[in-house]
Image (tube, rainbow, N blue to C red; front, side, top):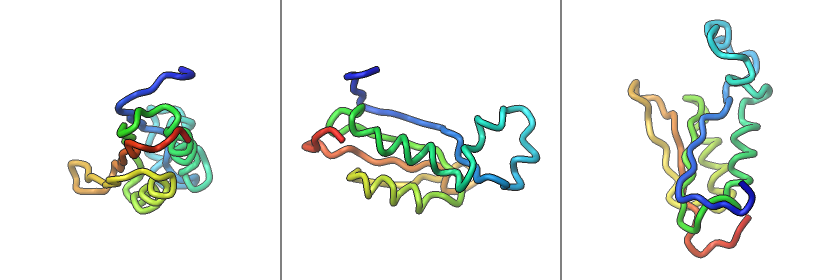
Length: 109
């Protein structure tokens, strides 16, 4: 994928915190699909950090995350220079997806 750029990138990486009680109830997915360990944000950090070199100027990055991680994910996107950062709720009303737009005039990161 080197050199390819996209207008939109959507990710549903593993994001559940290590030791979260929800992990005991999730039997159908491999553990590595659910949690990266630690605070659950390592995969999200890696995606945000590398997204600039894969997004068109003005391109969007949309991320699914835990219901209690919206603030941390918004901060990651803002720190990486994304604009129009916003969180949306799932059907139960929990904040579950956050996205932002790469500035149109931003150089690759």
